[in-house]
Amino acid sequence: MHIKSKVVLIFSGNNQRAVIAFCRYVLQEGILFCIVANGKEDTIFESSYANQVIATRRKNELDFDSIINLCEICKRKYDVDEVLILPSTEFLNRFLLQHKEKLKEKKIEFALCDEVTYSLVSDKYEFSEYCKSQNIPVPEDFDSPPKKYPYVMKPKYYGKGLSKINEKPVLVFSKNDLNKAGWIGNSSDYYFQEYVDGKSYYLLFYFFKNGKVECFSQENLIQQDEGASMILARSSTIHQHEIAQQFIFALKKINFSGLVMVEVKFDGEKFVMIEANPRLWGPSQLILDSNMTLFDAFAVDNGLKDKIINHGYRSDEFYFWSGGLVANQRQQKQPKFYNYSKSQFFEDFEKLTTHDIYLKEDTIKIYLNEHN
Image (cartoon, rainbow, N blue to C red; front, side, top):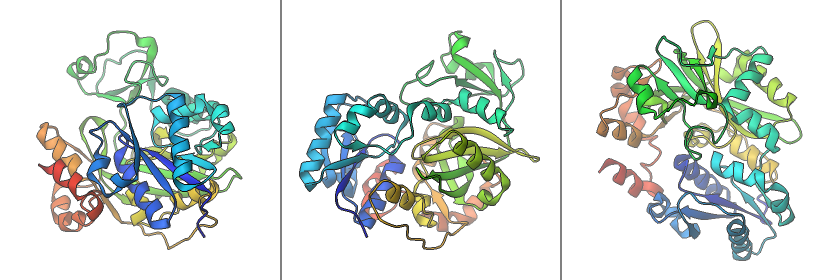
């Protein structure tokens, strides 16, 4: 049974593939939702969900009064008392946590743990240090750029050194990469890690407020150059390995709740923690296509549904974003292959097109625009 006393407010325009996947989920489940577009160029206007847009904000800008106003519009539209804001991006989530108490007074929720716990998991340096303390392997750290390439440069804390909206680590394979990153020598804002190669996985969790956990996984097969978005992945059974239980124990210990993706690599001997993202992740369409119960868990725990419907998890289901591959080709960049070859890609290609995130009726315009 779906509960009609609450509406989901979705901020579109960033982490867009995850947003589209969640729109598909709430539409399929009959859950009430509204969308706020991110500027007039937001690709949500090229989708079937354009009719759910209630407002367009200035690109990448948020303010407290505007959020209150948008939530009131949602409440009036559906004649409900409560709004749940989808925790879709780091920028949005940090903003919501800063105003948690005031939003709560207005019956506005956002399905995140407390600010201290969220920062511990999301800040790359802090979570790496915490994992060390829990005997979870992490890459070797350096206080200054190591002499040997490759390595990874990361801001220690959110809002330090790189963009406040999109803080991707910088992969440094040469001095030229370091120069391109625009780093100007304030090393105290950064830390440096060895580059770990090997099989790449996401461990995918939903931690209920009562301590229950849903856990799944995906194997990453092709990633955009420079460690950007995943192009190809498939649902996995790696979450049945002991490493998933180590993360469950570690995250329960700090009373974490909500959605979280933990990236790990298998270096041939052990799983190594790369980073964690306590929010939606790009290949979220795989949640739907492989029957993961993560969105159901999110919905039940936050009063959108009254029970989880388990349709039977399917491993080896593909997620594919052809637009990400096209973008790399146009920029003359080489995507990274993990435990997968170009010959396998061509062999699987016909099957992969049926799993393309945007090659669907509701997003065909986005697909065509990405390929033009």
